[in-house]
Length: 124
Image (cartoon, rainbow, N blue to C red; front, side, top):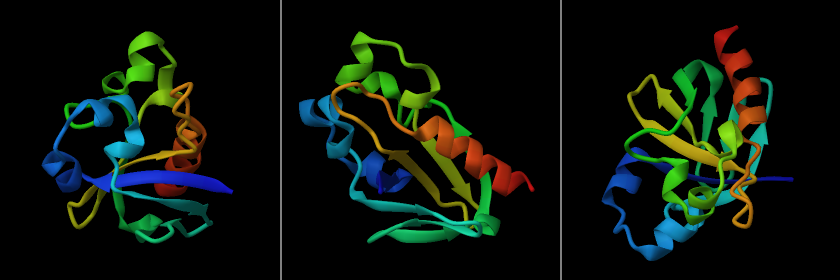
């Protein structure tokens, strides 16, 4: 079972940043639970379901809002794309950041694999 942590850009920007949000990404992201990837949608159980045709753009990059270098594990090591957040821009202009199977000990996640699958669905 895949697990997610996710938040909207508004939730992240309104979060009181402290040592705990820098140490553990799970303290920054407000929603967590089971992540489901189907052939028509992604579901963040307990948070939201997003159909592929609702997604305007997807990226797997650090930016000014969420960056893997902000978390303590990534300050010590460089992991490449699997440590970076996925950013979804929805057609309604909502922005969602998330990680799938993020590991606090290593800073690694399944984001590169999930990004590649989602990107294929969205572009086709």
